[in-house]
Length: 475
Image (cartoon, rainbow, N blue to C red; front, side, top):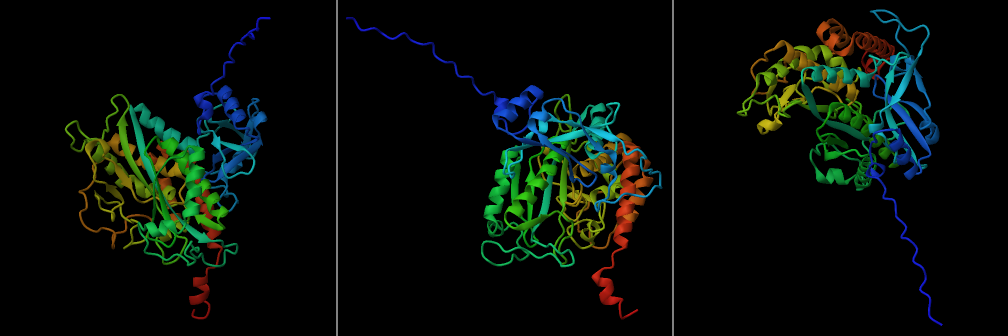
């Protein structure tokens, strides 16, 4: 009996997983979002947005509900609250809305990513806010930055930025009455200061840093470099240059990431500007250049490689308007403890080539990479507002052709003080700069100034140890 050859079945075609599903960060539309979430078995999604302090606010929901055209909203009061959770009094143009109406959350699907520290599969997405008419809410931080970027776009320009964020690792401190202290590293000893660029200092926290890299990679966040700074357990992360809104999103997420990684290792990460007395403050330096959208050319350089008028005018605008925008770079009472004479944190508005004592440093570079580093912002600043303010000052300078003074070639941060020395002075100066207010938006300026006045008054209610030590028995 002849053997029968079994009939061949048609080969099963294996569906290739689309690249957008495998991508760690961002999709283009809701169909792609559904597939992205399903491929990862995501159960919950955090719909978040930065408030005026840069704190993540929002709602969590099941992923199936997220993709079913659910309408999300937050009360407008969320964006009028102080860092302590209170609200400003009416006055100085500010009036608390009587109805406290809702603002609609609009997910930006290009920011969709995992939340790698959660035990259950969880994703996050950054949202913008619109009012009931669908118009962008002017006083919310991400929209403030978008407003400034739109002003650049109308000129045919695009900004490129690269933030550098410093922060401290500290022992857990559940009682705020006690000072912060450095943590113990792998050597078993508390970390001391004077460790600038020390590889051994970085290695003290190997496992924590591994988690930071792992968490960042899972979210599609790109770290350029990580170093140990001068302070005790003070680290700095540098991000790759790019679009200001994308970089502000990254700083927003990095702060969450670093705090979560630190908690996993039983310590805190803090972005306070001056967390430990006697130690250096923490900055968020911002490198800035401006690109012609048509040609892709850096407008800070002429075709022959020399400095352009736009370069000088950008610096001139910063020199003139940064003092009025300081409240966005140094937003809390503590921020001004970092900005002191004879320190690496500038209190001047000078500029210079590779001069770290100036507010605006021009790093050595080839013409295509010519940029201006704003060294004033503290790491406690909301990244959206700090970038918006810095780029707004430069654009005003270019629009008005403001000439800078001559570059400083010597130390200029000893006795020269050209910035407000406290929060209330900075707030008043901010309100008076009408060009800056117009660039950022009137409703934002009124709301933000009201919040800062309220925070200052709350701080003034606190009696400090210094007052008890030197005034209690001596006055």
